[in-house]
Image 1 (cartoon, one colour):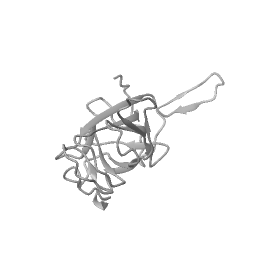
Image 2 (cartoon, helix red, strand yellow):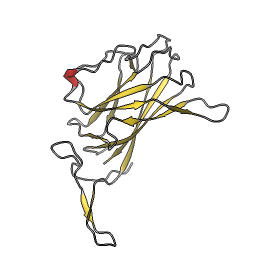
Image 3 (cartoon, one colour):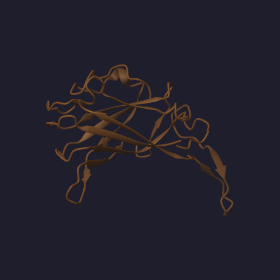
Image 4 (cartoon, one colour):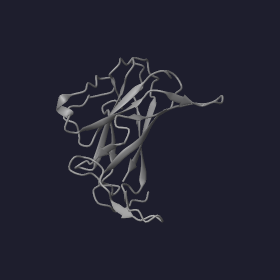
Length: 195
């Protein structure tokens, strides 16, 4: 992945700031707010059971419900989430909807494990930057399709600004509907981050 060295693109209020000014052929100066899109991906395999979820339950590995992205290790100081996808390795339960809460610091309170309640907690407000809803999956049009993909709808359509002090984005995925999962189902979360 190529990473461009840049200044922090978020001002004190968390809003994008121009990184440069270019003069196009019409000689009008325009701010250039962003320079590069970086794709990030994490996969989590839920436990090998079929314990039913109820609306609001966290989805994750047996003892860890976090989807974490170490952007600092990739040389990215901060950015703007502009797109997201959720991919499931199953085609069952295609009407189930999901939500992922975005934190740019480790939240003060987290569900302990898969299938635990994932409430919106006031103590996490300092690290919470927004959320991404995954509500309408697409499925393969041909026989033999074996996954569902959801395009994320961001809480801020302009993008979710993130500037993690420790360089790690933490997302918690939960279900908005009750359903009986497939044992060992894989959930892949992909983010497009403008830096």
